[in-house]
Every structure is written in C-alpha cells, then in structure tokens.
Length: 630
Image (tube, rainbow, N blue to C red; front, side, top):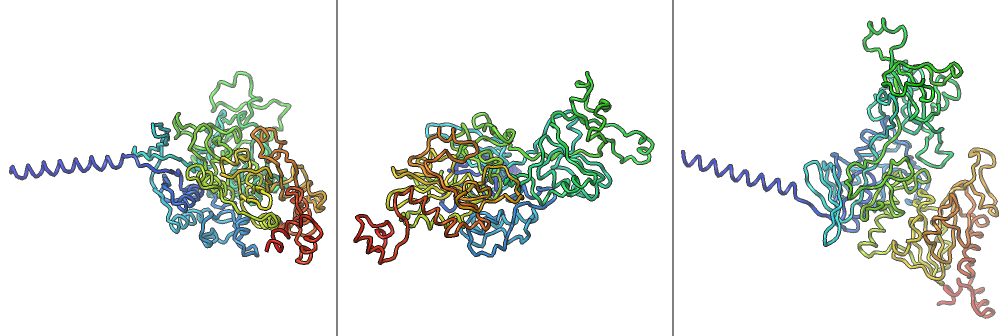
C-alpha cells in the first residue's frame, strides 16, 4: 500500500514538473530578427524576399491558413483584380503588367493563372494560390498565433518589438513588418446607425431581398457589389453617401468604382426604380416604425419587418435631437415634400469599407492615423516605416496612405513592388547590401530606357510612386530600378549609392493632369512636339544636376510626383503602350539624353568612326566606347 502511495506521489510530482516545464516553454519569448505579422499576400511576399536573403524571420498568422480575408471577402465572391492570361507576349515582366494577382518569386510558373483562368477570378482561388506560394517556397509561417498586443521594449543592447498572442506567448524581433491589411469594418455614428446591417454580416442570398426596398450606405466597390447582387430581386435599391460616384476608368485609381460592379448606374439613369443620392452620413437619422395599415398583416405574418425611415438632421424639428433613435418619424416641411429618400425601406445596409486595426498597439508602439483616407490607415514615412516607430514597417494595403487615391499601393499588383522596395531598404540599413543596380555604358542608356518603358511592371503599376533612378557618371552610369520617389531626398542613405556632380535622371510613369472627357475625341495626344499634353499613362524623364532636397519635395508643383527639374522630357503617349517608334519616341528621347550627358549618343559605322577620329579632336562617345576602344 505504501509502495503504491509513493508511486502515485512520484508520478504526480513528475507530471507537475513536466506541465510547468511545458508552460514555461509555451510562454517563453522567441526572438527573431524579423517578424512579419499576417500571412496575406503582402506578408508572404515579404517572406519570399527574407527567405531568399536567408534572414532570420517568422510570419505570424492568427488563422489556420494564408489569405484568410479572402475566405469571406468580397462577400459576393468575385475579385475585381484583372487576371489577363493571354497577352500575346512571352515576356514574363511585361505579362505582370496585366496580372494583378500573382506575387513575385524566382519560380516562373508560380503564377495565379495556375488556380484560375477567369478574367475576374473567384475569391476562393486566392487562398489556394497563397497556399501554393507558401508551400513551394518553403516560407516560415506559424498559424494560430493571434497577436493581441504589440509593445516596444528598449534595453542596453537596443530596442525590440514584443508581440503577445492569445496564450500569453511572446515573440520579439528587431524589425517588425505589419501586413495585417484592413479588416475592421468602417462605421459612421449617426442617429439610428444601429438599425443598419453591416456588409460583413448581410445575407448574400438574393432571394432574401425579394420585393424589398433597400438603402445602401456607401458608393464604393463593396456597396455596388452588394447592389448588383440584389438588383433582380429587390423592389428598389438606393445608394447614399456624401460624395458622388468616382469611376476608376475616369480617375485611373483602381480603388474607385470598377465597371464590373456598376450595373446599378444603368438602372438609375434609365429610370428603373434604383437611384443614387448624396448627404453627409453623420447627418442621417434612421427611425423604425410600423407602416400604416400593417398591424393586422403583422399578426398574420410575424416575420414581417418594421419599416425604416430616413431623415436628415437639418430637417428634424426643434427639440428632437435628444430623443431616442426609435422615436416616431418626423414629417418633412411642406416645401421639401419631394425629398428623394422619403419612402420607407425594409433594410439599410452599411458598406463603407474597412479600416486598420490600431487597437493591438500599446502606447510605446502606437501608430498615428494618416492625414488622408479619413484616418483609416496608419501614417508612414516615404519608405513605409511607421511615423515615430523606428524599425516598424507597414506592408500591403496598410501602407496605402503614401499613394492613397493616386496609385495602386493598396492592391496586390502594386504592393508586391513596394514590399520589394522595403526589403531593399532593410538590406542596406541592416546588412550593408546596396540597392541593386546595373552598370551601363552611357551609349547603352537609351536602349535600356526603351526596354524598361516597354516592359517593366513595377513603375507601370506604381505610377508616380516608384521610378528608375539613373546616376550619371560620365562615360558610364548606374541604373537603379524602382526607387521610392517620395524618398528621393534620402536616396543615398536608403540605397547606398552616391550622386555624382554629373547629376541624375529619374524615369517616372505618369498620367496627364488636365481634366478631359476620357472617351471624347480629343482624349489623346499623338504629336510628339506636344508630348507634355499627353493625358494617358506615359514615361516622363526628370533631369537634376543635384539631388533634390526635402524642402524641394515639399514645395513641388501641385500634382507633380517630383520637384521641378533642370530639364524634363515627356515621351508622347502611345496607344499600344510600347513607346518604340523611331520619330515620335526614340529620336526625341535621344536628343534629351544628349542634352543631359553633354555627348552625342548616335550610333556610327566603323568608317564614320574612323573619319571622325581623323577630323575631330574628340570622336563621338559611341566610337570611343566601341570601335576606337579596341
């Protein structure tokens, strides 16, 4: 009996020790040089770059698989990102211009077209692609880690960021890369706002809206996506927001309303019961009451809904401000009895987009909200480092405040390149590896520029945000691809390359700044002598004899991506986006480059080089670097 008791006590003690040891291991802090928070497209994209550079990193994801956002959104399961597989070209870099879903890797076949061939793919295809991306590249991802707190810890050896998960386990890192995207629903508080359903929880079955009047708050893609899905069932669909509709094909901003979702514009303008209206949502008042004459029918049909009435705050009678949101509806004054939204609704749906989750950052690591995007995004520097949080970088959609409503940095086909730019900044800052560059003879420069404007995807997608920097050094030059334009004053400290007294040229893709009829007869410019009037996307070259300063960037002309240069050259817009014609594109470009490098860049035959050597003290540069150099 005593032996059994001793055995029981011994086993109990061993169990307690093992449990304590396991708890210690579970709660112990794991340290990495790089922590990537989020295994969405931006997080996995950065994971590839870190893995390729053989850095010490971990990707932390709260869900059980990558790209979990796309398991639910968009709610009606069609992506609006282009998946153009058939371009008629075999150039992989060119094809990425029209592939808005693939991530960058060193595997040429690891592309989104593997999981879907549809032009607008189903949302379910994206997690499948991301899973294949993670698996085939062997990325280090830890799933089921729900980080609820991020804090900055300073010590004698430096600073680190500590991430605490749902099990109180800590992960610390020297560099934190936040790629959580935007997933917190954006809401606006107004009287009766609690009566509105959210985009995140509405039914996606069109039959649930049969013969119902629906009011949608918002006029973005999620709002129009929702409207389009119920057009054939709802009795009427109205849409309300403070701004008018912005069409992506007019603004050139892919986050504005895309044509794939805009069928309700037809039914509105062709007067088929649907419509759009404008009012500040903060001024909206929604009240609920039973429609007249419905008491008896409600007894027969208990599932019948109370009606929702919309009013505007300026129309409320004096003394109504303090009443509850379920107060009886107040009639409008007689002189505005034709108020557009005077009829009752069965449903009000909030579709106002998403915002960044600021709540997980404590005061030591708190990110300030951006000055644009209504504060929905965190504020970041021109190289995507959090303001006031050194060593904390934003990736993906969360970094979009730098180019909000002006370029594609909030979308996969844009932030795959800004993620690469952030990695290059980190490589130089922490490992001494300069921004990759190509050394060219000056006589090769024009051919290289023509190659880049004809195929490069990074500057093409991230127009006016990423650009190529050409460092002039006399007989040769250094070609630095896809630098962050807004960080140009910090070029040397971020890239590791010095600017010589010869100056530099910056190649940018940009749209014209004039407001035009995008489908009108005068929408395009074909005369190369009027190239500066180009309206469509086209290459622009800026020549500076010295690096622009931060003050130059602040005082640049409105709408310009860069400060006013010493010389500027627009390559006239091209319908085929190839910019390769001899007279309209190549010859004007050569003349501009010759002005910048102070040398003749024409190509010469052997005979002409020989004659020039006999008759000129200094033969053309092509001859010096070619035939005469042998």
